Structure formats: C-alpha cells, structure tokens
Length: 236
Image (cartoon, rainbow, N blue to C red):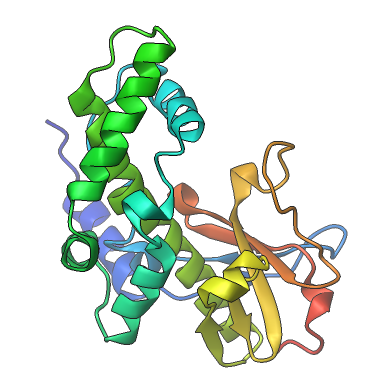
C-alpha cells in the first residue's frame, strides 16, 4: 500500500481545485501552440478499457473487426449522431450515462451480433485463445469506452481551442464529420485527432491544414496541440 504525505495530498488537491488552462506559446519555431489541459478537464472523461486483455489480442480483434465489417451502422448504429443527440439533451455524458443512452437508443442486440461476426472471422483466421465472449466484450469496449473516450477528447479539444481564440464553439454534425470536421471555433472548422496517430500512414483522411485547424490531443498527458495556429488570425 502506498502512503502519501499530508503535504503531498494538500498540494495535489490544491492543484485540482485551482486547475486552469495553461497556454504556452514559447516554441522554438513558433509553428506549434501548445495548450496544456489540467486535471479537471479530463475528470471522469476517459475510461479506455473494460477488461485486461491478453497481449496482442486487441490487435487481432481489430483486424477481425475490419475484415468482418462488424462495426457497420446496421449493427452498431451511428455512434457520433447518438452522442450528439445525447449532448443536445443536456446529458453531460459520463461513461455510465453514455452507455445507458446508447442502449436506450439502439439496444445491445446489435453489439452481440457484431461480436459474433468478429468471432466467426477469428475462427476463419485460425487464431486461438480468443473466445466469443471476448469478441462481444471487445465490441462493447469500442462502442462504449472508445467512443466515449474519443468523443470526450474531441469535445475537450474543441472547447479549449475555441476558448484560446476567444470564439464560440459547436460540435460537428455527422455530415460535417464525413468531411473531416470535428467542430467549429466561430466560422473556422477544426479537425481533432489523437496525437499518436495523426500523421501515421495508415490513418485515412489526413488533414489539409489549409482548410481546417488541426488539433491533436494526448489524453493520458492531458495535452493538446494546435499545429497551424495561423489558420485563425489574431488569437485573444
């Protein structure tokens, strides 16, 4: 059992209570603006997994999910549309709230169907050690946890960047998302990506930094980056 000193706990609580957005613009090139988010912005916002997964199993499940097309909307619905509908109803969107709302809109039968499709594909791939229950749980993790984590990360980034430029914000519609837009700061479109995958070759829909404000975020470090700050003139 780890014990922390009273002074440490006091400092940590003071940090959480006094959390503010720290804006740092002192980069060597001036090409990237870093906006650092503090603990309260991500509180109750990220719960990425449902279980402890055996090594490499999620990579295999991901491939099987792609090959089987298990995550098509006919099985799992349109998660972003459902998320936006939930938020439009004033629901904050904790993981429990998101899970309950999704189930009320779509039920869970489609998730089971998607899990079975993945399991059938795993069997065709002749990969051992992965059960049908694991496949179903993986679908639930993607739909519940990963969607919640992704949408939460996007929302935090959109809000903070709009605040930085002193502009109102809104989140994108499904149609706008298909065009690579995740939100808006005033009249300016924003595209948000996880920092670790934004520039990898396998990621589709690479951003056009002449047409969108590119923002990446690092959930575990509660940091996001604006990659082309000149896209929006005269920040506050």
